[in-house]
Image 1 (cartoon, rainbow, N blue to C red):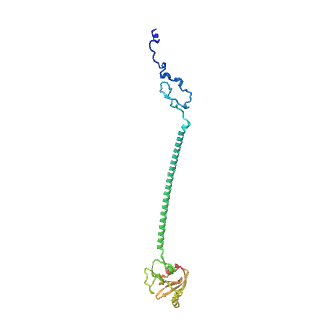
Image 2 (image 1 turned 180 degrees about the horizontal axis):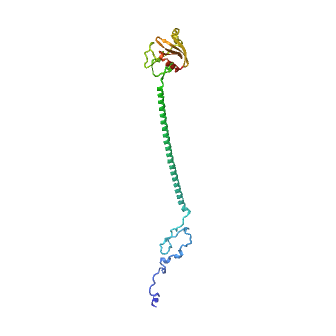
Length: 294
């Protein structure tokens, strides 16, 4: 058969070149490793690292690119590899928790501050209202007192402090004229009368004469002895303050009918006199209000 004979090599024809038959070819000296011999055992633990990886290319499946022999094989993650991730997760949770606490405290602070501001505003309003009420009540009280004082028909007379601070109440319709203030010593003299004070003399009539004399009590009352003997005046005693006063009534002076009260303060003698019987009622009321310092 012709076709079968063509397959028989002809000794005269040169033999095709084959690297495996050339002992000098590098491939013949270093033959390719058998894939079946170098294939990785599927039962081998891939997690066990190779202590000294060989250089070259590791065998790979047919039709795929060769893999570098020194490229480490994929291995499962160990506890040491997972530790940094676990630590980062814990820190994140702690940070979120701290932020929530901070936000909570900030909210509580704002809430308490608003409550405090509301309470403070309310307290300030109550204080202002109480102050306004107190001022209004005090103003009303002062106005009432002023009105009562205006209704009260008397004023207060005050004598010099060096002369016992003699004082008494007199009708507020009376005017006061101080003739001698005893600032440099001597006698004190004051005159009171409704409207204008009359010129001072032994014949003019004033509602009240006030005299504090630098004389003894006995020497002053002695001037009324003649009138007592003549019967033109009558005498009685009356308590004025802490003193016992002699009260002379009748014709106390030429053309003057009234009353005179004489009593002692310290080393001085006080003489209170009304020049007309018209003022006797006010005169006796006045004597009931006399005060002085012994």
